[in-house]
Image (cartoon, rainbow, N blue to C red; front, side, top):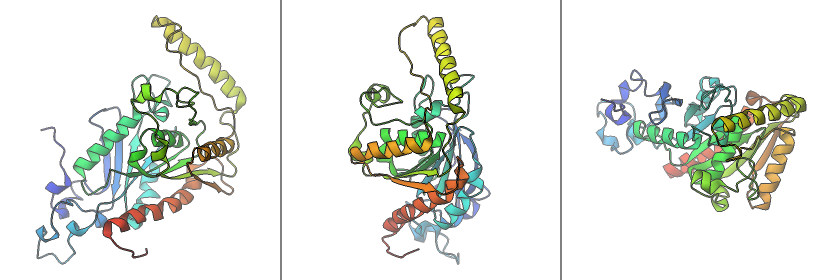
Length: 334
């Protein structure tokens, strides 16, 4: 049978040996096997079946019933271009234990959209990938296997390439976000209806089948974060001049080979300024649309996700705990 085992089917004492709590082995996404994801679920805080009454547990057990626990909030960590998932096993696992929450780390492999593809996941839609829909499909799988995790409104964090994904996902699916941390993206999408995606949002309805709803974006808690020493343009201006020329030539060759010369022109988006200026402009433009975003600059840190992570988790922790306290109906301070 091709049906995944779910936590309501497993006695709580067997969840660990069944690899359904703690560090979950990397799982293939059924909707798109090119994509995978890993999870960390703190066993001592997880409710394997929120629909079960606490009295359904073994009455001889001395420990409080696990079925008494609220659903765990979910923090989603989006990797950068280097595809580094190690934070899941270092800083994020202790954060999950102490907050508490569950952690999800999707993996969008390089070359998924061609032999030189590093970036397709960052812009949400490419020739063969809808990375936003892939994340939603992952959330559906998590909800089915782990009903004790709240997947309806998630907390999202991403640095560099992950920051690109995070703010674009905010535009298209704000109703699924409680809060988002956007870290040091090299290139961003402005809420500019005069520019095509991914520079602006002129054509999002045609691309994604849905428009950008600024009123829903305003309801999301937003952090922008960068290191004070993150001032260099990645690769330098000469690299981007070469990259733009090379990419334009490749796009033209692909279009000619397919017989679609002059049709469906694709924009080559380059990084032409530092990330600090980019984030400041993004914050300013959002403010014009009534979207408030907190900008945190971490002193002495260059372009380094580990260097800003304490700041990011410090921002998210009270927001995630606030959700949990609301579920508990408690005002107990942590």
